[in-house]
Amino acid sequence: MDGLDPFDGDEDAALRYAIALSLQEADNEPSKKPIELSSDEDDNLDKGPKYPSIPKGAEDLSTKQSTKGGPPKDISKDISAKSQQSASTAPSSFTGLGLDRKRMEEERLARLGKRKAPESEPDAPSRRQRPKLDSDLRDSASSSQTNSATKSGFRSLPYPKGVVKKTWAAGFPRADDIKIEEVLQKNELQLAVISSFQWDQDWMLSKIDFAKTKVVCIAFASGEAQQKENVANAPKGVKFCFPPMMPTGNMHSKLQLLRYHNYLRIVIPSGNLVPYDWGETGAIENIVFLIDLPLIEDPELRSSNNLGAFGEELSYFLRAQGLEESLVNSLAKYDFSEANRYRFVHTIGGSHVGDKWQRTGYCGLGRAVTSLKLNTSQDVEVDFVASSLGSVNMDLLSAIYHAAQGDNGMKEYDMRSAKARKNKLPAGVQSTLDNKFRIYFPSRDTVIHSRGGENAAGTICVQSKWWDAATFPRELVRDCQSVRSGLLIHSKIMMVQHTQSGKSQAAYAYVGSANLSESAWGRLVKERGTGNPKLTCRNWECGVIVPIPPQEPDRNGIQRSDLSDFLDTIPVPMKVPGEAYGATKSKRPWFFLEN
Image 1 (cartoon, rainbow, N blue to C red):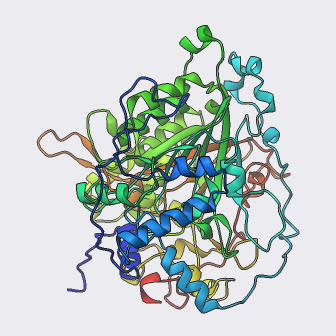
Image 2: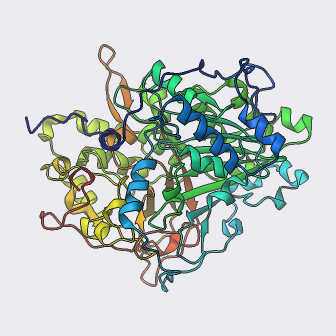
């Protein structure tokens, strides 16, 4: 019995189950039909979606708020009152949208009492300060393309070339960080297409003006009943897109498409739409990528616009999720030329055959690395920061490692298929991973002594049955401690460096939602019947590859491997190198289900 795993190595499913146990179930019958995404041709990122007519007798809280002209908090009060009248046990949050931990957070704060975070704590003095704007990023080959954005005044946009920032954390000085208010800019926000693993409706009502901003939520739902429940519990006018789900998968991607008067902001964070992931409790931090794309005013230039590699993969991902086609098509109204220095990478839940398996999961990662000409046959150094670990083994690490070199997935697949190795990797591959793949995950001591203590680590997860398995690579794991002392890290970052000596080698970072698990990256197998490759992924994930400008080797001609070269582009969140756990069981990680 001990060998049975009801989650099949899926750490996100285990986390969802654990969160569900802590919440009181609400028996809430839907009172209206699900809001469907309109097929109207005007329903796009330029004008926003059109909503179905409101049934007679239904109170339009958004219109009421607009008439009063009061602050957004009045909407929250109205919705809360309405919710209490319909069902006393119904929570005021989006109950079906990923099982948010609002109630757990309230209980945690109650236990912590009135303890306050210190006013400020200095950042580690050895860290270089990155420029506040993104002008430090060097132009790539894509910047030589004709840029119609200059005629649109894109130089005045906040992040025209893209930037990576930490989320703000209460009690710490502002440096290389960003608040959710600065991301959303609610006074100017016209349309928001947003996705998340967890949601807090009351908090969102304070960050987005639902009276004037049209909102489309890309959300998890296990079936039609939960879709109806999501719609019934949402504020008036919110529309939904429910991606197809695997039986044990999760809608784990976090993506925001934010439309303003003359530009589109693309946001790829590691945090959910809950207050603690955006620093408001001062206990946990995340990381976020932003880029602002100018609206193409000239109709002739718009008709010939090319989305490029970044925009094409973004569109592919959104279509796979089931987002209204007119919304996806309207991306072509924006200039993606500056985005093409990056690559949008994703994991699409489901099974992928034909040539589709090469576009997603770790196979898609390798494809994207090659398209940026960052691929190499030489060894690379990989530092992977994760907030959840699945049933990790060397096969998974080998697949991700080769993808980091630019392989499309076939190298690890061929090695795994040649089972003459008796369930073991070739000696050379094992040695490479032992020396060049480092995983950062917090120890129990790190969590206990953090600012929020164990009650702040509800979204940090690994199971002891996975950790203690003979196949789990404990010797590769290092304690993950933030450079902002006392914060826990919910970021997902993979930093890759080419280590060939004597040459200046490029590097890059993955920033996004994917943790270190098979659920997040997929598994390539042989399809029954055809014998062709088939990639199976449980989760929906998304992220971005951020190239790091080449750095000169040291005096001995050896490329540095201490991550210092990343600091001008990526706010590296953890202390390096980090204390190794080692192959013994003496140092233990944080086990959410057992604390």
